Length: 133
Image (cartoon, rainbow, N blue to C red; front, side, top):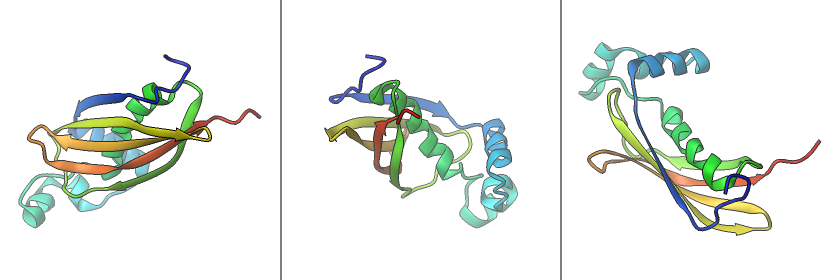
């Protein structure tokens, strides 16, 4: 079903978040907030290590979007909440399921959890067909 949307599907992608990937995301975003880039500061403020960028967690769902939406769709809207942080070294499971399609707009639900079940992101996204130039 590569080219067509999967309107009744659930796709899961798992990834262990590493220091190297955190550094790459820092370079891309330019975000130098100490909770994300300074392990000593993160421990002193939150009791744990560096926090994974929330948008890096959100980006894990895009792997599932590609499968659920098919090759002709793009992300049109995204709404997420981040109730708990993920830390460097945590494995995040991103699950995206289709919630229905209306007028060519495929709505999906997003749920990202840690291995112990802690919820780190939840929300929804809409995928639409790519407009031809």
